[in-house]
Length: 87
Image (cartoon, rainbow, N blue to C red; front, side):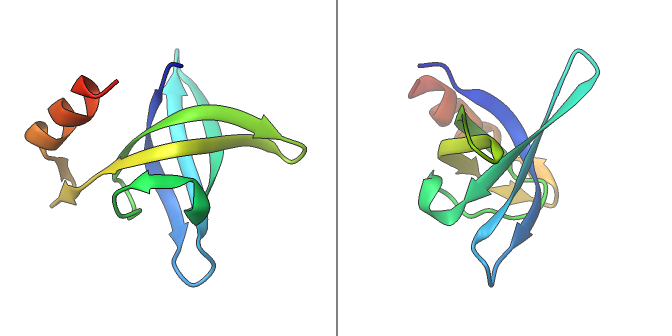
């Protein structure tokens, strides 16, 4: 299984869902993310996230999401390296 990389664009804390944006070849892809599909991490705006792309009857869906913490909108290199190494 391959994992896609994107950024949390929106997260609604009180509802437990949000959206991930992925840009590929200049095209924007949006994936729905539900709290039940988060394997690790805290979903905050601009956080880097690795996930397995899927879909359901409503559209693109992110599953098994691993969210990398963001500090001052910069990704922690050590955390990103650990996440990549685990694939």
